[in-house]
Every structure is written in structure tokens, then in C-alpha cells.
Image (cartoon, rainbow, N blue to C red; front, side, top):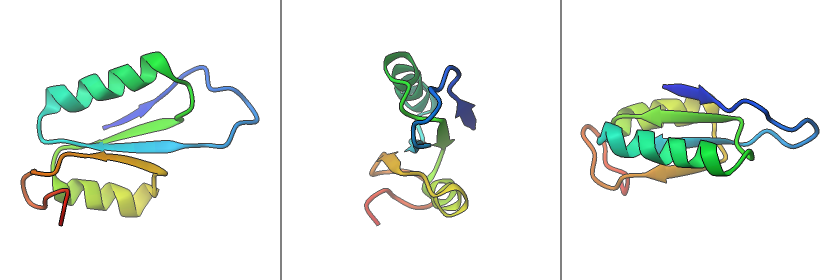
Length: 78
């Protein structure tokens, strides 16, 4: 899932974030909170498991990541 944050101010460096959590509701609420309280991120990428997180990390190279430490396929601390 890729969420684009509307209303981005021009002239500010593009910053992207990856949220990886196998609990879909938690990832969605974290993304919602970020979108409501800051305009510093251009895109929010969401991964449902560790392997998807690695794939998104390699593809998009986000500047920030929020990881669940226990997920299917690969864990956040490995």
C-alpha cells in the first residue's frame, strides 16, 4: 500500500516513510496519525510482513521506517 500525502509544501525535501506491521489496523492507524499531524512525508509505504518490508525498502529507499519486531516471513530485528 502506498499513501500519497496531499498538500505537500513546495521546496521541501522529499521524505518517505515505511511502516511494517502484520497487524493491518495498527499500520493503518499509524499512517493515519502521521498524515493528520505532519506534512513532512511525501509517501507512506505499508508492508504486511518482513519480506514485503525488505522489498519496499530496496525499491523505494525510504528515509524513515517504523517496524514491528515480530512479523511473518522475516522479523523486524533480524
